[in-house]
Length: 102
Image (cartoon, rainbow, N blue to C red; front, side):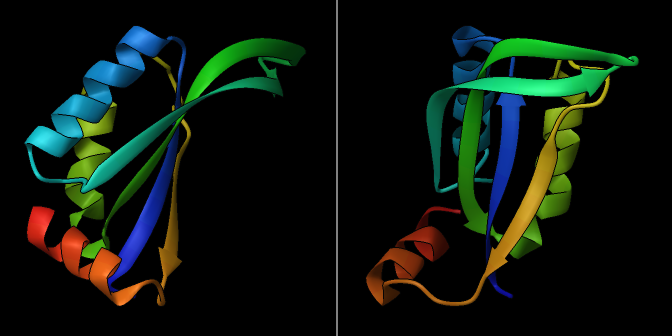
């Protein structure tokens, strides 16, 4: 697949905005959307509830490895969520825009 979304979570809005800006400035992402979420998960054998910021990153699949490296270098979590979701279809002019901006 030529295009993908990458889903990442951050502990706070400030970190999320900085990470998103870095991705767009380095042309690794065409767009990053930030959404506040509540996450319930098991970590170190305890069920935990946290408020987080979810980043939905739209990019080309060829940028995934460099995007992952950037996230790992700047992320505060020991094991950050980094999930790639490939997609093969979308509005042609939107996909063209991803091509132009990344």
